[in-house]
Length: 334
Ligand SMILES: [Mn+2]
Image (cartoon, rainbow, N blue to C red):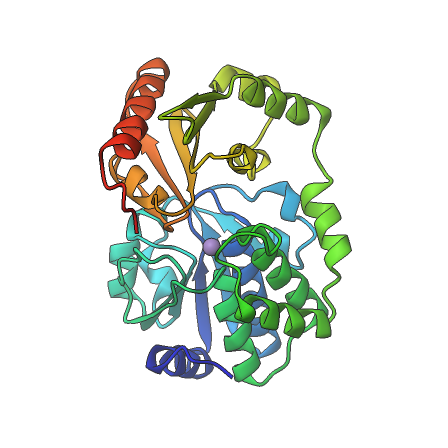
């Protein structure tokens, strides 16, 4: 079973008790928030509950193989009446800002709320906060919740959860991967998830233009701070010319970690008019501490932020802050 403690039991009781669930994914939804949400959505439907899923941003097509994919609705805000009498379930969402724009209002209007997440900097904004920073994906927690729920896990739910798990822990390669990650994989494979099929959908699915876009980024790799930092960037014009979605850049920043000796990897991409910074790190450095300098956050080893200002200014600031951080700031990391 599990060692998630009282909040796990509480979340489970609330899921069982409420006849209506409103499931919320984080902005720019990724595999983990979507896979976890769709698995819960499917369980709710099987249990005869009234369920809905929302996210601020559009659904990435790469996950279109999820059952009920078309049921996800994009909304900047929800009318509070929409959550009246319902259990609000936020998945993989560390802060209220990453959810729908009026989450604080929805938290007041709903019958009850559960926040299921694995970000160590989660702001604990719900009535029940089931937050497990050691989990390599929110999907690990949801897998255990579904197991404990006692209604089984269907093949479709297993595929969604396995996708969530493997996209968040880098196909079981990142240092977040644990015995529990593999135990969850065992549960999901037993329930019918097929890893090779899922990997084909997620990774062997790039357009030629996006592959060349990755190439453009890789070609301009810069190393600094005694080659401990690696950095590249992509302009909005390049991203739109390749018809790339934010999800088609997933995993790109990790390529920099393949360079021998690199401890901090940084990608700055101009997406939807914002300068999006993605950072990866290995000990003793903390990606989260670097992104915190720009008002962002995430995990110790993987974090993100939005950098204000024009793109060229943002490039300069990222380089400067990362260099300062690695050379003089917090070299002990966390
Ligand atoms: Mn996650």
